Amino acid sequence: MSKSKRLMELMMTVNRMRKFTVKELANQFDVSPRTILRDLQELSELGVPLYSEVGPHGGYQVLKERILPPIAFTEEEAVAMFFASHSLRHYPSLPFETESSSALNKFYYYMPGDVRDRIDQMKNRVDFFAPTRQKESQHLSLLLEAAIFQQVIRMQYDSRDGESCRLIQPVGIYASNGFWYCPAYCFLREDFRLFRCDRMDAVEIAEDASPLDHRHIHLGNWESFSKRQRKDVLFYVELTKIGVQRCEAELWPAHAPRVHLHPDGSGWMEQEVPESEISYFAHFFLSLGKEATVIKPQALIDEMKQILREVLAKYE
Image (cartoon, rainbow, N blue to C red; front, side, top):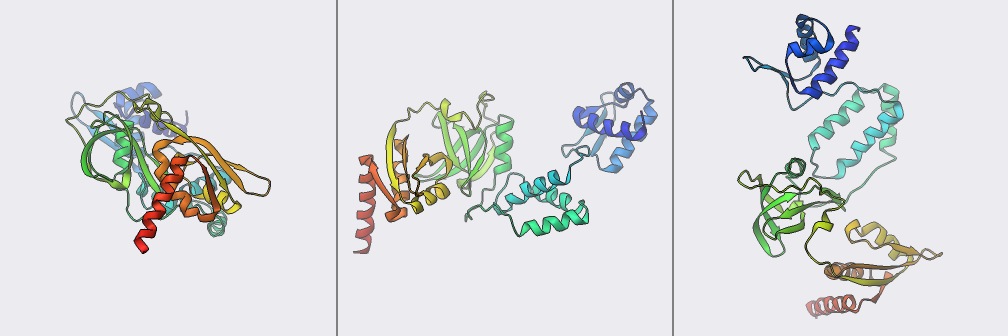
């Protein structure tokens, strides 16, 4: 095996093993321990973060910030990866903000000049906007780590009912319409709840709390494990062409019934949605004005009338 090939395989091996001895590697690659020591020195000079421990149980260890082996990208793949990372810049908070910025710079500066010129031109012709929100979500990395490693979080949560201290076990995090959300098991409610990440304060790992085994629960199925009996109501709303466009642009996925289209671009929404969302839809459809006409349910119509009465009273 050539030295360059051995170094490449050695880099992949130490990234996979994390902790190892020189003797283990020498046996695996069928070379002398002295050769392995020289190879490890070269990997260290290339940026692989190796840490050595002395003693009978010592050896080498790869630090958390591992260096991945080189990966060959085609020009189109590299451009696609660049813009995938570039598209996240409109979010004021990310669980890997520093790392994505670093990766973006590496992709850009190590590309050939003509590819960089192409990217510079594309920057002004393609973008992925996200609504700007005033308050940042400061604990995304911690929440994500807790979801991956099944840890319990202690947090101060600022809800509509005021601040409260909660113990939660996160399922994961996701972004929608400019906000970050964290579905989690709430030990106070003894059930799953959805939390807004920007409303979380003083977040920390609760070392004294015992986590539940939720490895089978993820973002795609967490609602099915809730104990709450969901009561649905049938919505039917007629939409103008502009109403259709605004519903498709502004309703975030957790709230969005499917829009059906007429040939002229107008349409309607007809679907069962949780009764608990009536207040949300009342405010939303009022914001559409004459572009939406709610036919049913009556509870939604009544809620909209009540909001209008309160608004009129405010200005009389």
